[in-house]
Length: 59
Length: 192
Image (cartoon, rainbow over all chains, first blue to last red; front, side, top):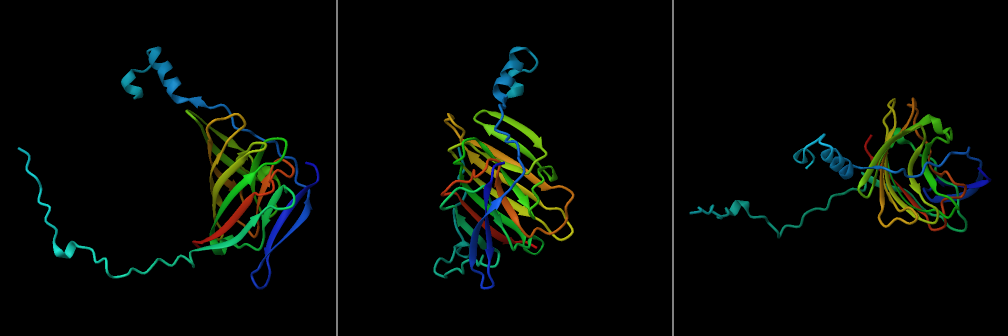
C-alpha cells in the first residue's frame, strides 16, 4: 500500500474529542468485490422444468 | 347470519391520556463517544482510541463512507492496531437484486465501497471480560452501473483473542480510500 493517512481520534482529560492525521503503513490487503450470486427463483424454475421438483414444492 | 362480537369497553380499559408519561432516559445506556467527518484530504483509516470494550460491553458504529480512490475498496474493522488480516474472520451474506451468495473470508473485511461511490453500514461489536469479541455489520452500497443497492450482512470476529479492545479502526483496503465528507460515529451501548 502506498503511503497513506490514518485519522486518529482520542479524548483529552476533559473529554474533548481531538483528532490528528499521521502517516500509516498498512499491509496490502486484497480487495474482494461483490461476487455474482445465485438467482434462487431461476434455479427453482430450472429444477421444476427438469422434473426434479414440482411447482408446489418451490412456491 | 354472522354474530357480531360485543365492542363494549370497560372504563378500566380506557387509557389515561391526561397523565404525562416520563420519557425513557437512555443517556446512561447509549452515549456518543466519537463523531468525525473527514475533511481536508482522504485517509486510509479512522482509529478510535481510549476505548474499553470489556467495561462498556458494546460499541455501535455508523459509517457513511465515500470512496475517492481509483478502485473499489473493502472496508475492514480492526482492533488494538492489529493489521494482520488473517487474525480476523468474517462470513458474508450478499443479496444483489434477486441473487444471493455467501462466503467465508479470513480477513477483517465487513463491507465494500466501489470507486467514487458510497456505503452506509451499521456495525455492532460486543465483548465481555475473558470472552471473545464478536460483531455484525449490515451494509448497503451500490456498485458502478447498478440500478439497485447491494446488501452485505457480515459476521466479524478477531480470532483467538480475549484481550480487551482499547482501540478500533475502520480501514480501507485502498490507500486513502475514505474520502472527504465521509462520516463515522461511535456509540457506547452500555451492556457490560
